[in-house]
Every structure is written in C-alpha cells, then in structure tokens.
Length: 602
Ligand code: NDP
Image 1 (cartoon, protein in one colour):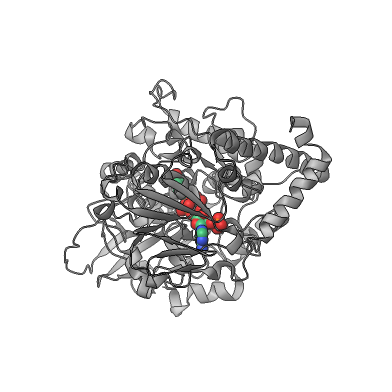
Image 2 (spheres, protein in one colour):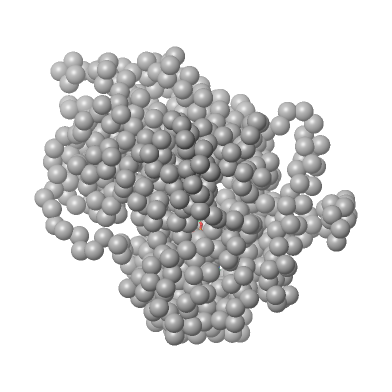
C-alpha cells in the first residue's frame, strides 16, 4: 500500500471498521470484574520476595510532624521537599522493605524506564546524578530513589514492611492518629498520602487458576530463587523449563526478550498486542544531555512536559518517540481540547493516527519473519488507546525457535487453567512455570481503596462522604472536613506520562502548604466554597473526549471498554498549566485555606 492509499477516505473507513470489529471481539461483559486481587487464597502472590525475614520491632507510639503514607517516588519527594522547608520529623510508612515504590516491587528481567531517564529520575539537579542510559534499567532507578532518601535523611524515622491501616483525627491533640498493621499508633500533625496509582497487582480470574500445580508468580514479585539470574538476565533456572507468560502490555514487552533468551521454551499468551515502536536506547554522557549548568534537569523535564501536554516549544530536547507522538497522545490527556473547527481537527487527527499505526504495523512485518505470527502481533486500535510501548528486542524474540505466540483474542483470553498448564481452544499448553504480566488495578490504592479508612473531626468518614457526593477537593490535595490531610495523586489535579515530574510538583506544593501552616500556627483546610469553585473549574472546561475512550479497545485506560468514570476528574488544560496555576495560587491565595489552631495546641 502506498502512503496516499493508506490515508484515502476508503482506507480510513476500512480501518475504522477493523478497529470496531477488533474492539467488539475483545469487550467482555464482566469488564473489570474479570480480574482477581492478590487477596485471601491468592495473597501469596503479593508476598514481598525482596525484604528477607522482617525483624520484630516495638510498636511506635510517639508524635511526628508529618506522616507520609507510601515510600515510592511520591513519598520520597514529599519527604525531601519537606526537609527543604525545614520540617524536622518526617515519618514515611512503607509496605515494602525499602524505599522505591514501583521500582522496589518491579524487578523483573529487562525492566527499564520507558520515559527518558534524564526527565524521569527526579531531583537530578539536587543530587548531582546524571543517568548513564537514555532509558535507565530499573535497578539504577531504584538506587536513585534510595539516594534521595539518604540525602534527605528519610531513613531516620521511616517504618518499612508496615502498612497504614487507618487515619483518625484526634480533636484534642489536633493531630492525626496513624495506625499500622504492625501495632503502631502514633500521632502526626500532618498526613501526606502518596499511595500510588498502579500498586495493587491483579490476576486474571481464569477458571481453574488455583488448580495449576506448576510454579507461578506475578512480574511485580519476581522469583529469582526459582528463575536464577538478575534483572540483567541469566535466568539459568529456566533453561530446561516450559515457561508461559500472560500479558503483552508495557511489562510483557520488556520481560519477553529476557525470558526468550533463557527459557527452554517460552509461550507468550497474548490477548491484545501492544503498539511496539523503536526504542533506540543508548549510553549517554553528561554532555549529550546538557548537564553542564545548574538547573539543566529542570529545563529538560519542563521541555518534555510542555511537549506532551500539547504546548509549543522552540526545541525538543528529548527528541524521542514520545515527543514525536505528542499530537496523538493528547487523547490520553484531559488537556485534549481544541478551539475552532472541531471536525477539521478530528479529521486531521485520524489521518495522523492512522499513519502512525500503519508505520507500527509495517514495522511488525519488517521484523517478524513468520507472516502468521506477524499478523497476530499487529495492533488494531488508535495509538493512544493503550499505553504505547517501545522495544528493539520484543518483536525479534518471536523469530526464535524456542518462542511460541499463542493468540487468545478469539476466546477473550485464556479459557481455563489445568493442573498442568493452560487451555486455549482445544490445546493444552503444558507448563512448568506461568508468569503473570497482567498489570495492576487502577485507582484502588490508599484512600480510594477503602483499605485506608480516614475519619476526620466528629468521626466523619472521608470514603462515605465521597461515595455520596463524589470526590471533593481543592486542586486534588485537600478537602473540607479533613484538616491537615494532603493527598498526592491525580484525582482532580493533573497527570502526565512522566508521572514522577507530576509527583515532584505535587510534593513541592504539599511541603509549601505544611510550611505555611507551621509559620502561621494554622490548620490546612479549604472551605466548601473553595472546593465548589474548583470542581466548577474542572467541569466548565471539561473536554469532550469520552467518545474516544468509548471507541477504544478495552484496557485499564477505559475501564475495560466502558469509557471513563463520569464527572470531571482532572484539570483539563494539562499538567504544565496546572503546575503554573498552583504556583500562582501559592503566591497569591494560599492563606485562604489556613485557619487558626486552638491556642493550646499552637
Ligand atoms: P497492563 O495492564 O498494561 O497489561 C496487562 C496485560 O495482561 C495486557 O496485555 C492484557 O491483555 C493481559 N491480560 C489480562 N488478562 C488476560 C487474560 N485473561 N488472558 C490473556 N491476557 C490477559 O499491565 P503492565 O504491567 O504491562 O503495565 C501497566 C502499566 O505500568 C503500564 O501501562 C505503564 O504505565 C506502567 N509500566 C511502566 C514501565 C516503565 O518503564 N515506566 C514498564 C512497565 C509498565 P489486554 O490488553 O487484552 O487486556
């Protein structure tokens, strides 16, 4: 097909029809209910394989200035920014055995940053660290998390292998009582929740999953004791094994090449193929990334965020496939909004999208030698329907004799598991080991999960209030009726594909709120009017892009094909504009949400 033929009205109509058919054969009536959490009889899937034996300790009963729930990049950055504001006692409480969050849990072979390291790793200016690869391996990122925690002395008061189980406001002390699953009950003047978004691993609810007698684990709890090797590979324990992997999202795409190198035979159970674009990872020097002056990392990070938020810049510093696709990614962002002739914009978007997806499908044909396998590996949906992936090794793995692609789209995924393996159609694939690269439940961590009940003054329960009227916040951070509670996340704020950047801006904001309250001996609590005004701002400019997600192939971006949740959930003008708004608000209006403490407590 020539380029012009690809983009003719007939070709576009054909493509639209193909996308619709492919979507329809994937939508399942059970939607998000098709998955299981790692609870009850499946609880062992969530056990921490990295912490070793967890030492007994005495429960903590003291008082700190700030409790931070979660020790991933959100919690670490909150801690670091609080230290910069001179806050003395900061206690991070973390379920894992160390800092790192997603990079603590995900240590699967092949793990890498899929955003450029020089914009993804936070606080490079402050730590003087310059990543060595354009896309850093996971261990380098985890070590960087530890580096920040050490530099800002966050280990001193931290509690690891500990999960916060409840937050309750103590009116007398004007502080939060924080309880954990280790028997702790301490007070904190402020609480910052940084519980992440993709933290609760999920498993497919395949009938018979519990009957499988082989070895099995989830990619976010890699069992190196069984596989041997390290994130760099060398999985010698798999040399004589028949290994299955379920899932071909961003994780599957990174892990499959390493498994292919070492497994006796690898079966890749695919339901929907990812779009797999060029990676071009390479060593970088400080000179390559302009790390020769103060503030270089901030400039680069801002430049990337502007581009992926749909803003115009003079120079593209990162210059990779993310920035090259920025126009198409706007559909992922609430910032998607165009003035003027909407129909013309939509038409131009469709043409650009089709051209990019045609390139991605053509790449499959160029790389994969078996035409039948190549056909199965082609994604039939719009670019922003699923998280785009990048690899120069994944498609190539299917040219190996020891790798078999098993397409399960016709049966809506694996139909059944048996004692010996996996059943797809009439074929039983006998396996020694089955690895789930099946991702995470979205929006079910922290206060949104119900696993962290929050009771404010008068015993009012935050989750019950939100169940009645929907989430109510000012800027996504603070809520009326829940003083000194600051939430980091993306509900009613703004997000981006470079999530650590967003977290850092949120951490700066949270620390500024705490510093202002301390300086004025005040409590942080927005009025109902301030919440109403913020929710009205979100609704007023809410973009009309629900149709886009509704037409997409199912996945976690669109509630497994059901469109997005109702109601304005994010600032519509994108993360860059949101950060500017926060900065201005801090300069001009922050005092409006401070109210005096009871004098005896001041
Ligand atoms: P995803 O949710 O993206 O992928 C899960 C995979 O499991 C999909 O391919 C899904 O198929 C498949 N699956 C689920 N149930 C079944 C079933 N019953 N039978 C067959 N297949 C099934 O999870 P990931 O862990 O891959 O990625 C989650 C997110 O984590 C990414 O989107 C990204 O944001 C982040 N990430 C970031 C990385 C980085 O480098 N920064 C690296 C890895 C992940 P289907 O598509 O049909 O539902």
